[in-house]
Image 1 (cartoon, rainbow over the protein chains, first blue to last red):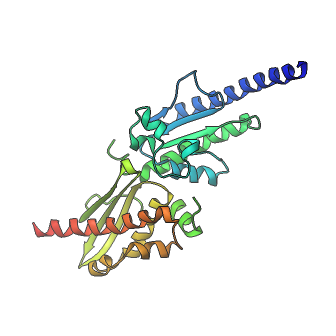
Image 2: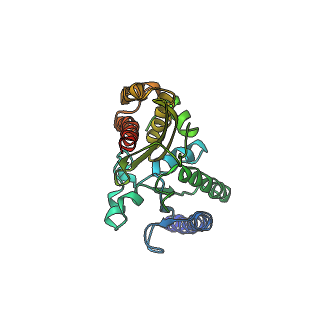
Length: 141
Length: 124
């Protein structure tokens, strides 16, 4: 029981570290990318995940560019990654389908580092601007 | 989604991306609600597609098929451009995943819509 409590206490500390990384990632994106929407409750959500929608860009196209840069993320929700439909969770939350198509989910774990988060913050904005330049939805705005 | 090397190459380095402000024909196909929207611009000179550009909102396959269809159609006569099918686009890309074949159809419809727009414009 004592050992279990010890492990649990360590896990709580790690959870806080993961949340710090997630918040850093979120702040970095909000500072560098226009027209994004963070999904979910500001506080009442999992500490290690960041779900957001990037307007005027489709999710898979961002995912492929991130993958090319060695960054593994998911588009949509965990349960619908094999489907072309926008996440039914996001559309149920009132997000229009066109915007829901541009969702990304970053899942952080205990192995992730500040350096990795910095890299993602550096890489995603240029991917988004490249894809927006290509998007017929963006020119109208 | 596993794509061929050629799909990835066109996705990473799309050919003829952009718009033609004084286009002779513009084709808009797809629906952003479904995750794909393609706009194709053409310039026509002496019955030949003299220039062609595209803008696409969509997945990797949608961007790659847009890029490929501009390569296939650019420089062709209107008649030959209308003969380019979605299968031609998919084959030139060394195939597409079955779930993504509709993207090649969008590319075929896009060029047809642009040519139709061109015909409508010269009629009036």
